[in-house]
Length: 328
Ligand SMILES: [Zn+2]
Ligand SMILES: [Zn+2]
Image (cartoon, rainbow, N blue to C red):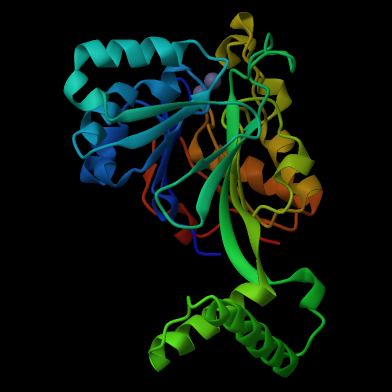
């Protein structure tokens, strides 16, 4: 698994995550443009998990800076009215670059293409607002970063490589003959050869969507079944333990709900994911306490996953290249 992950996450203040491989920015907290600088122009898709200040505080700047480089997609939960208000304000404030943002109001399950062939994103519902009932349009979303690959068809996977090669050639020739019969095949031998190879490959393969990264945004523990199969899970862990759960800091007095380290790792455990990044960890904790809590909890679960934590206050440029806090 090679995934480049640049990010910053200090709850209440700012969260942003830059996935260069997908050319996607997840959330745009305060300071996102300042830190990312001209990388902002490489963004094809901005994905907003929800409209809290610490996740959208830098969005106006992103729209303005990115907009100068041409059109880009900006996706957000369809049940959140704040994004419509922001879009209207951005258009008045700086129409020249704001009109380049193509806003997508996403429902649960909605896909969105990225600018990179084969890479796309699927939204899933999260539980961050206590008044966000399943029958309402979602106010918060998580995202699966998906990668579509051509793989050998499921019904052919028992074949040996020589058998597959033979089948590919046979199927390719049959498809080419159909084209020849209708006069659509190229006469030039090299072009004909290339087309034969392509037709053969198409006949024995099928597109398979792999879930690479699942990002939950803020909220209650994700459903294990939702994130199972992902190569990398990013789960929020605002509090180190349930004893610290501070209703005011969590924003529960205004109906927002968060997770603990223990809950986040439990999700990873149940889902069987092998790589986990904990983020959105309260700035009240010293770094050493965070590391200790993560190690203890992972050991208690006998977690079969590598665990990193994006410590609050810090900016990471390639988090997964750092030593994990815990490994099995
Ligand atoms: Zn937050
Ligand atoms: Zn929030």
